[in-house]
Length: 450
Ligand SMILES: C[S@@+](CC[C@H](N)C(=O)[O-])C[C@H]1O[C@@H](n2cnc3c(N)ncnc32)[C@H](O)[C@@H]1O
Image (cartoon, rainbow, N blue to C red; front, top):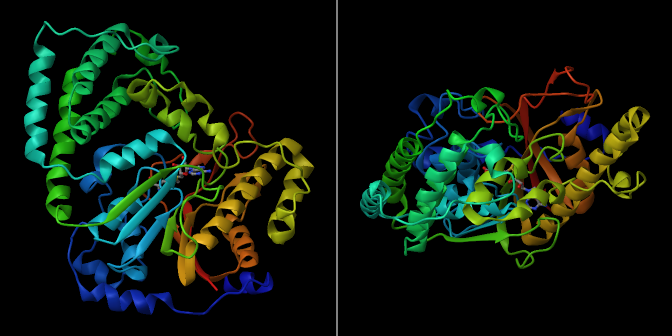
């Protein structure tokens, strides 16, 4: 890989980041959710985390596509930050980096995210609440639910009966109306997020992927979920996770700011004010990779009655492909130029999809450079994917784009994706039935601002 970068004229530093890790790693051996006695010996090579549970603490409250593995985020944060650090995740999703900053008691953690449902989820997941209060409130919800005299209106939104059986809509609406009456905002949001997990389980959707599809097998009478039983299970699970989370963070002082906004646009973060950036951008546009908007749509319509979620996927990175195929971004990455030529020969439209994604990604790299202090690190976890039989080297394209902006490429690591929830197959040609393995490995790119 070093030879590849050298050939491409990318400034690759030979710094051994891992000497730093080694020293810090042994300093304070604590939580067995992150480190075991055996992995301390060979932590240099441990990036797959196949024997670790990712659903620890509030990380396990709710599903989200392509979430960070907390152990990976923790390992990187332990190396590059300390208690005085200001940390940014400019694609913060469900909030893994922010939660880890809180658990590690970092000074400040900032997230930028364009999916309003993900922002809501992250907010709940970084808000510790005394579990005793949650248990008591759960009993109140249960009592209210089984009292026959409460008034509530059935939830309405476009196509609701396509996605939920009538009986399920009634039970969910009743639960939602009880939860919405909770006065304390944080407690209310905690129980709304639990409801969102149930919404996925009791809907007629097929849970196999992240795109919205109705599961034909669920339309018949045999699919008859008990909404309150499911709610009970999720609340119990999440309150138990909160017990451990709360006891770990209740004295911590991390200032957490979640910006609901677009990473391509300069946000209200001062120039050179951030000590470290850790992020995982989407791997491609939402049409052909993970559709974050589709994943979030039903939950957000229930929780917020917000139909804008329909247009979300088109607004994420690479969502609009009305670009020119000779955009100047191509001048900054010969690798991108060469690979795009190959796709263009096959299909102009797919070439536009691909290029629009990298144009957008480049804008976010430029903003990241602005926020970051000099000499500090920016770590991106990304994946290479195949489009029209071209294996796109996102690792090298990012290296070239970042090099032009003023970053040094310090290291690229490759890890196996073992327990990240994302589609492992896609259609490289967009032809039905033609599949290839994709994104079974991830790249961890370590950049440093010069
Ligand atoms: C790979 S996911 C990040 C997951 C996150 N690391 C976690 O652990 O939950 C990428 C995220 O980027 C968000 N995103 C895509 N385009 C964006 C943009 N232009 N600005 C901000 N966020 C964006 C998506 O909504 C998605 O949540």
